[in-house]
Amino acid sequence: MSSESKNRILYIVILLAFLLAVFLFGAIRAGHELRWSAWAFGDAQAIFAAEHFLTEGLFNKYMLPAYGINTDYERILGNVYTHYPQLVNIPFITLLKFTGINDIHLLKAIHVFISMVSLLFWYIFARSVSNERVALLSTVFILFSVVFLDFMDSLVHPYDELLRFGFLAAFVAAHRAGSKKTELRLLLLAWFLALLQSGNSYEYIFFIQFFIFGYYIFIKRRFALKRIVLFATAPLTGLAIHFAQVIALQGFRGFIDDYSKMFFFRTVDNFQLKISEYLATLYEGISLSYGIGMLAFFLCLAAFCLLALYFRKTGALKVESGREVGLPGELKIVLLLFISGITWYIVFMQSTSNFIIYMTRHLFPFLALSIALMTDYTARWALVGQKWHEQGRWMGRFTSGAFLLALIITLWLPYIENSYAYIAAYPNRLGFKVYPLSTHPGLWTRDVEICKTIKAKESADAEGFIINKRVFASYTSPGRFPSVNAVTTYYCDMNIISFTLAEDFPGLINEITDKVTKKSEFFLLLENSDPFAVYLNQKLSEGEEAITKVPVTPGYKVSIFRFPPDIVAGWEEAPWHGASRLEEPVSPEAAPL
Image (cartoon, rainbow, N blue to C red):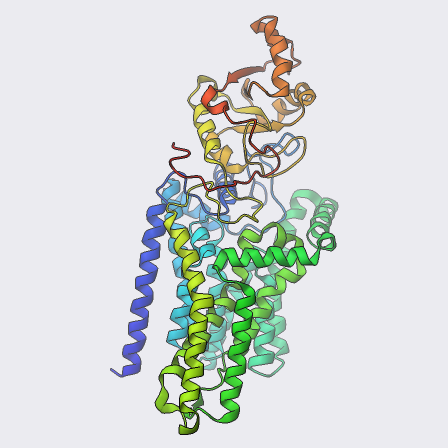
């Protein structure tokens, strides 16, 4: 066995060891009751959608997901979500239906495994465009980044990375295939993965298409029009299928109205953003996700490029194995990954700003390959002194060594510190604050305590309940009838109907009952200082049965539930507006369950 083969096996063994360690970390962590991914309410919505598909049939709503019991009275029970393709529901439903798995912790562990598989595809891609060292370093960079660790057990996002990295591996492998037949098969696989990605989410449609176009222009240096057009049909096909689903549900006029509003909200509204504020949001989001300052990163990358060009110009390095080691050829791929990675940020600024918590994943390829590449090359330049011409030997080694030290101090150490701080907060429970800029920093653990209290009561047999907005901490939509966070609904296991104005309540009862329940009881949650409590207390002061004077659809009644003092305590100090955010991380001691 050659030394090259031995080295390749060694790197693969190291990679598998890292993947296994992180998999065990994620799988064990998934067993904690309050461990959810950073996009917890999206995971809960995926559960609701799967339950609807299983009970009502996959084609009942043209394979569009219904986010179930998390709804307000205007968006009735079984509300169908039309603004995003939801292919992700298919494998999730398959897991639920054909494996018999219904344990949420096991399902999360399975998705951790899917995340590990996606990184195997990344390793294959990185090795094909560089070498084993760069492939390993870049994979490790992604693996231990906070944004990866916090999303690897998501019930939604692992499929995105699986398809994106799978596409990259297949596409590049096709152009390095030894035969036309193998090339064609790999290209067809890459096309199919691009199609699946467009049916799974919109996120990487631009990324994939720009990578294809740039690969032929920058790397192959030819305008392969037929292939570019062929791959463009993949997302167009995915969009056509999704649009057909929405048209079948809403009609053509409803589809136009729905998507025009959504499109203008996510694009034209960009002009309401201040570019400086948007860039600051993006900058801080990336820093929180990876622990590195982007200014320091780009300064290092620019210095690395200048250093490489200088080495090539002066001929300071000898040719090693027929290749000039003074100028990395991978820099073209780095540039291509950067262009592909920022396309979504440019086109959908509003969407990026609103969902910065997971939008930083777009830069996985660019940052990982760049930092690994700089580290590998400068380490080689500093260590292989015998490869230098005598005239520049010591200067070259000193310069390279100094630059390597700068990389470690400015990029690797902050990255390691950031990741360590996250891992040390194990099990990273619900409500743990990682992303201050997020529109959804996490559900408060106190909300779960309230849900447990509700379910422990006899009245919890009701089909659903009505709350004033002040009861729970976390909401996902504003307005007079805000939508309660889906995770809250998951723990309460009931329909949750919320309102903000006391005068809305009587009419709300009449409008809701016929739409969202077939049972005869709603569960009304109040706390003593609630303005609406005054309204009902006046009724109750006249006698317990006076509540029946509240105009309610015949056949329905309202149950009144008073929270224990220990739960009500502190409500007045809580910031009850929109998606409340934590000022400090919630520790097990602060909020035991």
